[in-house]
Every structure is written in structure tokens, then in C-alpha cells.
Image 1: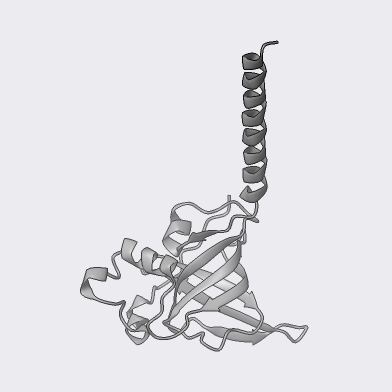
Image 2 (image 1 turned 180 degrees about the vertical axis):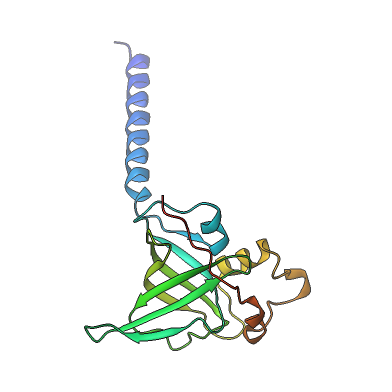
Length: 172
């Protein structure tokens, strides 16, 4: 084999090895990616059962229910809305201090077959001016906030986002 041909084979093997390593890394990360969805996204196309994702929007005014489970842990239910759609969230744990009705929230969890989002983590916004980028984008897409008109409206004005019934995903 000539030197030129050996160099070509070496280059080919290095390219094949790099491509294989990239494919393996992407395959490994695929299961660990957590996507953000708004209630409207879920109403359009429900994610596969058991798939973890972030659900964000505004906590619907008057939707917060605090209970205690039989084992003594807090059992909390509330509704997240983006205006056109809403999803009921069940969370077993202590809510963050900044959690309020009418304010932005991002939750991490899975959607159950009954259409209830089972949150394993609840993140509240930092102060009255902060809004997670994903929530701001979802509000812009649904037309509830136009960034050219200034910052998002204060949380206490979002009480008009009450929906008569949360949009639940049908079984199947």
C-alpha cells in the first residue's frame, strides 16, 4: 500500500470513529432531554405517556387546592393556563415560597393517562418582573403578551385568564 492510500484509510477510519462517537452521544442524550410545553401544546398533541417534560404557564386564580395525603405529606392541585388551554397539576410536596395564583410557574413531571400532570418539581418565578423565557414565549405565541407594548402585565391582572374547565387529554 502506498503512503497516500494509507493516509486515506487512516482519514476514513478517523471520520468513521468520530461519526460513531457522535451518534452514540446523541442517542444517550436523547432520553435525558426535557422539553418545555405549554398547555396549548399539550392540547394539540399529548406527549407520550411516561415522558418527562416541563409544563409552564400561569397558575390559574382560584385553582389551588391544598390537601394532606394519608401518609401526612402535602397533596397539592392547581391549574396551569396559557389562556386558551389549561392543565391540572398534582404535586406532592412543599411549594416554593414565591408560588402564587396568577403568577408564572414551570413544573417538571409527566402527564398521566387521566390528563393530570404529575409534577415532581415546581419552580416559581423570582419576583414580579421575572418571567421564565419559555413562559414568555408561550404567552407571546398565544397573543396574551406583545413585547412591543412593554413588559408582561403584572401577575394580579392575569386573574382574567380563568378558564371554565381545564383542557384534559382524552385517553388513547
